Length: 211
Ligand code: DC
Image 1 (tube, protein in one colour):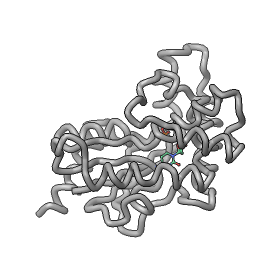
Image 2 (cartoon, rainbow, N blue to C red; image 1 turned 60 degrees about the vertical axis):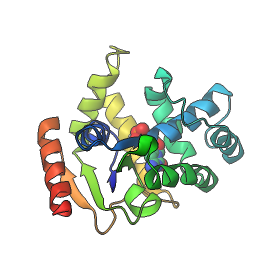
Image 3 (cartoon, rainbow, N blue to C red; image 1 turned 180 degrees about the vertical axis):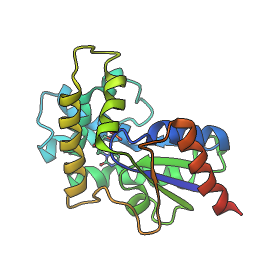
Image 4 (cartoon, protein in one colour; image 1 turned 90 degrees about the horizontal axis):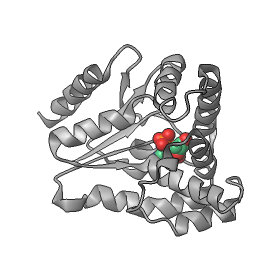
Protein backbone atom coordinates (compact mmCIF):
# COMPACT_ATOMS: atom_id res chain seq x y z
CA UNK A 1 0.00 0.00 0.00
CA UNK A 2 1.54 3.31 -1.07
CA UNK A 3 0.11 6.64 0.08
CA UNK A 4 1.52 9.66 -1.78
CA UNK A 5 1.21 13.08 -0.16
CA UNK A 6 2.20 16.19 -2.10
CA UNK A 7 1.75 19.90 -1.64
CA UNK A 8 3.50 23.24 -1.17
CA UNK A 9 5.67 24.24 1.80
CA UNK A 10 4.07 24.23 5.27
CA UNK A 11 0.67 22.98 4.09
CA UNK A 12 0.83 20.37 6.86
CA UNK A 13 2.13 17.42 4.81
CA UNK A 14 4.82 16.39 7.28
CA UNK A 15 2.71 16.19 10.42
CA UNK A 16 -0.10 14.55 8.51
CA UNK A 17 2.15 11.97 6.82
CA UNK A 18 3.73 10.99 10.15
CA UNK A 19 0.37 10.66 11.79
CA UNK A 20 -1.07 8.49 9.02
CA UNK A 21 2.04 6.29 9.03
CA UNK A 22 1.83 5.87 12.83
CA UNK A 23 -1.88 5.05 12.71
CA UNK A 24 -1.47 2.41 9.99
CA UNK A 25 1.94 1.06 11.05
CA UNK A 26 3.43 2.11 7.71
CA UNK A 27 6.92 3.44 7.00
CA UNK A 28 7.22 7.19 6.42
CA UNK A 29 9.54 9.01 4.01
CA UNK A 30 9.97 12.77 3.94
CA UNK A 31 11.51 13.30 0.50
CA UNK A 32 11.95 17.02 1.17
CA UNK A 33 14.62 16.00 3.70
CA UNK A 34 16.60 14.34 0.88
CA UNK A 35 16.60 17.55 -1.16
CA UNK A 36 17.34 19.57 1.98
CA UNK A 37 20.37 17.34 2.66
CA UNK A 38 21.64 18.00 -0.86
CA UNK A 39 21.08 21.75 -0.40
CA UNK A 40 22.86 21.68 2.96
CA UNK A 41 25.77 19.69 1.49
CA UNK A 42 26.23 22.31 -1.22
CA UNK A 43 26.02 25.17 1.29
CA UNK A 44 28.58 23.53 3.57
CA UNK A 45 30.94 22.96 0.65
CA UNK A 46 30.77 26.72 0.07
CA UNK A 47 29.23 26.18 -3.37
CA UNK A 48 26.23 27.60 -5.20
CA UNK A 49 23.01 25.52 -5.23
CA UNK A 50 22.40 26.80 -8.77
CA UNK A 51 25.59 24.99 -9.86
CA UNK A 52 24.29 21.69 -11.29
CA UNK A 53 27.61 19.84 -10.98
CA UNK A 54 28.07 20.84 -7.33
CA UNK A 55 24.48 19.84 -6.54
CA UNK A 56 24.85 16.48 -8.29
CA UNK A 57 28.06 15.75 -6.38
CA UNK A 58 26.22 16.39 -3.10
CA UNK A 59 23.31 14.16 -4.22
CA UNK A 60 25.66 11.33 -5.13
CA UNK A 61 27.32 11.33 -1.71
CA UNK A 62 24.05 11.63 0.21
CA UNK A 63 23.46 9.16 3.05
CA UNK A 64 19.66 8.89 3.38
CA UNK A 65 20.12 7.25 6.79
CA UNK A 66 21.75 10.33 8.32
CA UNK A 67 19.11 13.03 7.92
CA UNK A 68 19.06 14.28 11.50
CA UNK A 69 21.10 17.51 11.30
CA UNK A 70 18.98 20.35 12.82
CA UNK A 71 20.34 22.66 10.08
CA UNK A 72 18.18 20.69 7.63
CA UNK A 73 15.14 22.53 8.99
CA UNK A 74 16.58 26.04 8.49
CA UNK A 75 14.80 28.30 6.01
CA UNK A 76 18.08 28.90 4.17
CA UNK A 77 18.38 25.13 3.67
CA UNK A 78 14.80 24.97 2.37
CA UNK A 79 15.69 27.59 -0.20
CA UNK A 80 18.87 25.75 -1.22
CA UNK A 81 16.81 22.53 -1.45
CA UNK A 82 14.32 24.19 -3.77
CA UNK A 83 17.16 25.43 -6.02
CA UNK A 84 19.07 22.11 -6.18
CA UNK A 85 15.82 20.21 -6.76
CA UNK A 86 15.31 21.96 -10.10
CA UNK A 87 18.39 20.18 -11.57
CA UNK A 88 17.15 17.08 -13.44
CA UNK A 89 20.37 15.17 -12.61
CA UNK A 90 19.78 15.72 -8.88
CA UNK A 91 16.19 14.46 -9.16
CA UNK A 92 17.35 11.42 -11.14
CA UNK A 93 20.01 10.63 -8.52
CA UNK A 94 17.39 10.53 -5.75
CA UNK A 95 14.71 8.62 -7.64
CA UNK A 96 15.84 5.02 -7.09
CA UNK A 97 16.07 5.43 -3.33
CA UNK A 98 12.52 6.82 -3.17
CA UNK A 99 11.03 4.12 -5.41
CA UNK A 100 12.85 1.38 -3.54
CA UNK A 101 11.47 2.74 -0.25
CA UNK A 102 7.96 2.67 -1.72
CA UNK A 103 8.26 -0.85 -3.12
CA UNK A 104 10.03 -2.40 -0.11
CA UNK A 105 9.35 -0.27 2.96
CA UNK A 106 11.92 -0.77 5.76
CA UNK A 107 11.29 -3.11 8.70
CA UNK A 108 8.82 -5.15 6.64
CA UNK A 109 6.08 -2.50 6.99
CA UNK A 110 2.94 -3.29 4.98
CA UNK A 111 2.90 0.14 3.39
CA UNK A 112 4.63 3.46 2.93
CA UNK A 113 3.52 7.06 3.33
CA UNK A 114 5.72 9.21 1.11
CA UNK A 115 5.52 12.99 1.09
CA UNK A 116 7.01 15.57 -1.25
CA UNK A 117 6.18 17.53 -4.38
CA UNK A 118 6.15 14.92 -7.16
CA UNK A 119 5.29 11.66 -5.41
CA UNK A 120 1.87 11.18 -7.01
CA UNK A 121 3.02 12.43 -10.42
CA UNK A 122 6.55 11.04 -10.89
CA UNK A 123 7.96 8.95 -8.03
CA UNK A 124 4.90 6.73 -7.46
CA UNK A 125 2.38 7.39 -10.25
CA UNK A 126 0.69 4.10 -9.33
CA UNK A 127 0.29 4.96 -5.62
CA UNK A 128 -2.88 3.49 -4.10
CA UNK A 129 -3.94 6.80 -2.57
CA UNK A 130 -2.81 10.29 -3.59
CA UNK A 131 -3.45 13.34 -1.45
CA UNK A 132 -2.60 16.89 -2.48
CA UNK A 133 -2.51 19.14 0.57
CA UNK A 134 -3.08 22.85 0.17
CA UNK A 135 -3.59 25.87 2.44
CA UNK A 136 -3.65 29.64 1.89
CA UNK A 137 -0.22 31.25 1.77
CA UNK A 138 -1.04 33.46 4.75
CA UNK A 139 -1.89 30.48 6.94
CA UNK A 140 1.12 28.47 5.78
CA UNK A 141 3.45 31.40 6.46
CA UNK A 142 2.04 31.81 9.98
CA UNK A 143 2.51 28.08 10.68
CA UNK A 144 6.07 28.11 9.41
CA UNK A 145 6.87 31.28 11.40
CA UNK A 146 5.66 29.62 14.60
CA UNK A 147 8.02 26.68 13.93
CA UNK A 148 11.00 28.81 12.98
CA UNK A 149 10.60 31.30 15.81
CA UNK A 150 11.55 28.59 18.27
CA UNK A 151 15.10 28.94 16.88
CA UNK A 152 15.06 32.57 15.83
CA UNK A 153 12.53 34.84 17.60
CA UNK A 154 13.57 37.82 15.45
CA UNK A 155 12.02 36.37 12.26
CA UNK A 156 9.09 38.31 10.81
CA UNK A 157 5.93 37.08 9.09
CA UNK A 158 6.47 39.16 5.94
CA UNK A 159 9.97 37.71 5.46
CA UNK A 160 8.76 34.14 5.87
CA UNK A 161 5.77 34.76 3.59
CA UNK A 162 7.93 36.28 0.83
CA UNK A 163 10.49 33.47 1.05
CA UNK A 164 7.77 30.83 0.92
CA UNK A 165 5.98 32.42 -2.04
CA UNK A 166 9.28 32.51 -3.94
CA UNK A 167 10.00 28.86 -3.13
CA UNK A 168 6.51 27.68 -4.18
CA UNK A 169 6.82 29.65 -7.39
CA UNK A 170 10.14 27.94 -8.16
CA UNK A 171 8.79 24.48 -7.27
CA UNK A 172 5.65 24.99 -9.39
CA UNK A 173 7.37 26.37 -12.45
CA UNK A 174 10.43 24.18 -12.86
CA UNK A 175 10.52 22.07 -16.01
CA UNK A 176 11.32 18.72 -14.35
CA UNK A 177 8.71 17.24 -11.98
CA UNK A 178 6.99 20.51 -10.96
CA UNK A 179 4.75 20.71 -7.92
CA UNK A 180 1.26 19.87 -9.17
CA UNK A 181 -1.56 17.54 -8.20
CA UNK A 182 -1.79 14.24 -10.07
CA UNK A 183 -5.07 14.02 -12.03
CA UNK A 184 -6.26 11.30 -9.63
CA UNK A 185 -5.17 13.09 -6.41
CA UNK A 186 -7.67 14.00 -3.70
CA UNK A 187 -7.33 17.69 -2.84
CA UNK A 188 -7.35 18.52 0.85
CA UNK A 189 -7.34 22.18 1.88
CA UNK A 190 -6.11 22.56 5.46
CA UNK A 191 -6.58 26.35 5.68
CA UNK A 192 -9.40 25.98 8.20
CA UNK A 193 -8.39 22.61 9.62
CA UNK A 194 -6.21 21.82 12.61
CA UNK A 195 -4.10 18.68 12.55
CA UNK A 196 -6.87 16.49 13.96
CA UNK A 197 -9.29 17.75 11.31
CA UNK A 198 -6.75 17.17 8.52
CA UNK A 199 -5.97 13.69 9.84
CA UNK A 200 -9.66 12.70 9.97
CA UNK A 201 -10.28 14.02 6.44
CA UNK A 202 -7.23 12.14 5.11
CA UNK A 203 -8.19 8.89 6.86
CA UNK A 204 -11.66 9.14 5.33
CA UNK A 205 -10.10 9.20 1.85
CA UNK A 206 -7.76 6.31 2.72
CA UNK A 207 -10.57 4.30 4.32
CA UNK A 208 -12.79 4.90 1.29
CA UNK A 209 -10.07 3.51 -0.90
CA UNK A 210 -9.68 0.36 1.21
CA UNK A 211 -13.40 -0.49 1.11
O1 DC B 1 9.07 19.67 1.82
P1 DC B 1 10.29 20.57 2.08
O2 DC B 1 9.93 21.99 2.35
O3 DC B 1 11.20 20.00 3.11
O4 DC B 1 11.10 20.53 0.68
C1 DC B 1 12.22 21.33 0.44
C2 DC B 1 12.39 21.55 -1.06
O5 DC B 1 12.77 20.31 -1.68
C3 DC B 1 11.16 22.01 -1.81
O6 DC B 1 11.08 23.43 -1.83
C4 DC B 1 11.34 21.44 -3.19
C5 DC B 1 12.19 20.21 -2.98
N1 DC B 1 11.44 18.95 -3.09
C6 DC B 1 11.22 18.46 -4.36
O7 DC B 1 11.60 19.10 -5.34
N2 DC B 1 10.61 17.26 -4.53
C7 DC B 1 10.18 16.55 -3.47
N3 DC B 1 9.58 15.37 -3.68
C8 DC B 1 10.36 17.06 -2.15
C9 DC B 1 10.98 18.28 -2.00
